[in-house]
Length: 171
Image (cartoon, rainbow, N blue to C red):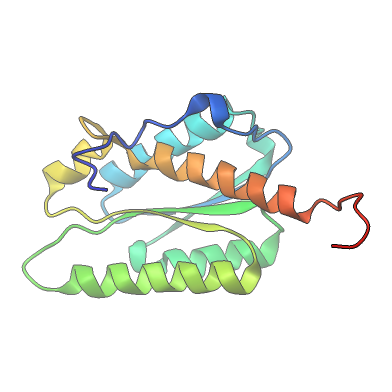
């Protein structure tokens, strides 16, 4: 769904699992820092709002969005996180660089999620211009960092729920 039709900061707060006891890695791109740091702020506030402890959060910065999968891989290898959130912004320019970068990042994070079993969340804005990015980093369309944090909490909770042994015998 296009973010012009949905506020990125809106989610069902009543059905959000607690983040207490969960650990999260956060990878933030330095490129378009005014945007990515606003995404980070929204992400951090959402994690803390839902019970995450600051001591259970590890944030690293990478040069650009293209480096997000490698940053996530480094974090995944350093500690067992319940989820890793990747925040970036690739603004469409005069060339097709955005399509190559966005595809590489999405594929890299998907592959890392599957290979590691750790949800790696794609919190990357892919706007046509700087104003669209601002609108999605705390502006009129909400904050993708909030959406990424909410997704991470839900995926981490799902992972924990499915991993719990059951008392059933048989199937």
